[in-house]
Image 1 (spheres, rainbow, N blue to C red):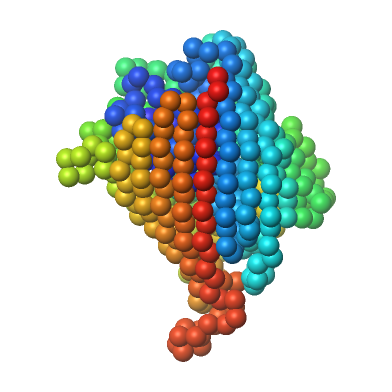
Image 2: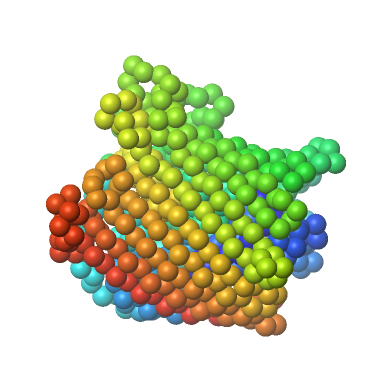
Length: 474
């Protein structure tokens, strides 16, 4: 259920994050048969190889052309590391896929042409330096979603830099999103859900990343286990994630990282996250979900398991269609809370994504987990009208950074609209976003709040326009 859905998310930049359009399986509910343009669609190839439309062909070839204008702060989340700096430019991408019974190969060369202007913004440090509104000096890879998979009797193994998504949300996930560019990794898992009984099915995937170099010039690795269970109208998920290595005095390799989830070697030195979710599909018209994440950091002589709930993260939401008896109208909401415990200065309390040894859980200066980052929360509301060949969606979200880190925290309000139209093998998308920031860079203090004043650079306004054409060639 979870990974077969690509739900009502033209709201989030549609085609720029879509290097592959996802087909719908015959057993998918009407909810999921709507024309979709979702950032999470891209990750389905990593989790489920079998796509009905592609099983009928050997080669798939598509082309995407995007043009943008951005007036101030860097923008764009959940799009495989692509972001829009201040200025204007374009992205051109060709996606090639080869399918056979036992092998899947994909590659997506991308060319960008940007005219970038310098933006005046207050610098951010530490865990806030990898947020999406910070200038990123890393160059994106020339080849995205590049890799090969082998399939045999329901099992898959592969190697590539496909981006990934895990979790029930469409705007955030606690452990894995495609906010960052995909990093190279090995994986093993089931090709699709395996039916254990009439109503019970399961799938799993285990990945180990290549070495990632941290800011201390030390290598670290991400190992993640993803398990999904479907029972009737319920989806259950469990994920365990270990960030290991990164110490100059501990010898550590990819082989060690691969076995770390099994043998827990040196676990006291590593960062872990255990993540759980449940999603209920109610009469194929409404979905509600709850995701809970537990970070784990070493606290010296203390057992870190004693303090897991001190910084518990949650991601909850719902999606509903058939509003006012109109099957084309949808509404939804999501709320992510990753706020460090209010008692962090009294009791041991893990913060989210704040370990310098692991680049604050980022790859090329963009987080692979929730884009709102450390000590944050993010509320999203959206409303849309979707038909088979067209859609229009409006969304607003409020995001806060550094809630316990400093008063007042950063506050960002985004308003966005997405219009999509599909005809024959073309898909055209227009995306508009207006963004407003207060207390940017944490330059204000409590006196500013009481006086209703702002320091220089505290208020930031950004407007973005993105126009995209997607063409399925083969």
